[in-house]
Length: 270
Length: 261
Image 1 (cartoon, chains in turn brown, red):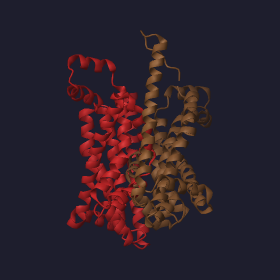
Image 2 (cartoon, rainbow over the protein chains, first blue to last red; image 1 turned 60 degrees about the vertical axis):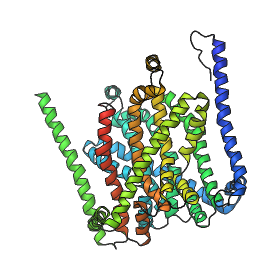
Image 3 (cartoon, one colour; image 1 turned 180 degrees about the vertical axis):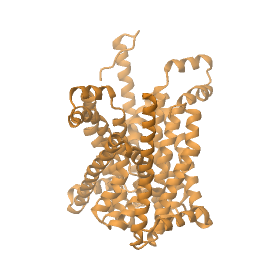
Image 4 (cartoon, rainbow over the protein chains, first blue to last red; image 1 turned 120 degrees about the vertical axis):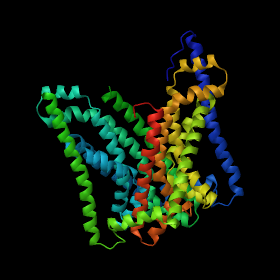
């Protein structure tokens, strides 16, 4: 957080001005949040709870997900779905990207046919088809989510492979003739930042798409809870689930992905 | 010699790629066709059934209305989201006090809010209506536009802005003659992304919140186990998306965003 002073201005002045500006920005940002929550508090008693449940009610339901067994079960199920789908999609996306790069003849098939299809096919379409094909199972959820996530992973890794420095590859060839060694010691480390970026994007997408997949394809998980609450007009539960997803996505990004990516950039980046 | 040899080899490699790509597609369709013959049509309808249902979506008036409705809503939401995103990005840029409100509070919130949540809340708040669908789509596209356009504004050279100010003090003229042209590549990128996202989103937004549109058709088809129509709506979305991109967005990009891209 060390601000570099403007040229022509005494360093202390610049620093002080900048700090004051930051304070004002933070004040506005937090002030607005407080004002919004305040309005929510003030308005909600006058509106039916199914239209706008009060913040306390939502918070109460929010906590239910860690205090009661049934809700906690749904939360952990979704966690399982998200990480399972991420692992599956990462393997499939990586396999496709490697095939498109190293097995040249398949490139157009993968990059020009499979990728655009997966990328433009609606996630909800996959979810509906998954239920018809696999019933309400974990498999259906994984299938629907993988169809949504694979294109994200593939395109990131594909771009990464395409942008690999040819000179470094050549240098590697001059050191060893073992393709596996070159791949492990040169290509893989160069790919890490791209793979990580793919994972970071997919993490957010996965949490959002899991709701969709579970809405149709599961009889447990947060998506299932949302669908039940929708039918019972329990808007406070819906908002609590949304809050959980926002908190997890936001916290995961800020506390894990952002620092980890910065470290990886420093380590592997150029 | 060597040159012609490599170009010959290159052409052969390209031909092989092409063969494998088209052959793969053909094989997939053939596989689909042969598997579908052994299965009931509510599990896996054949390609011909899906094609017939697809044709109906674009020809039979009662179904075509839905296709048109979805298309119009997509176009309207993309336009609204672009204008809204631009307005927010400009405010964040020109009113420093509000920068964090928009970029550090509003944007992450919108960005991490699940789309199905908006879809359900919109029906609760605005009932089943056009507005409900538009609201869901705009609110989800907004962060995409905002991120792209504020990145674009960050890239604008301050010296050029200063030059503009020295020519005219009219904010409007500066905006239309300086900011907008410099922002064009970012606007096109925002347009491209939100257009693609919006087509995929249309089904979600219309799932609960509409009594017209392809999403509505799909839900009804799912209830009646008309799987051919379910697949046809998905394919229709893919086709409409590709058509719009090739016919409108690609030419726009060539016209405004320079030869690259």
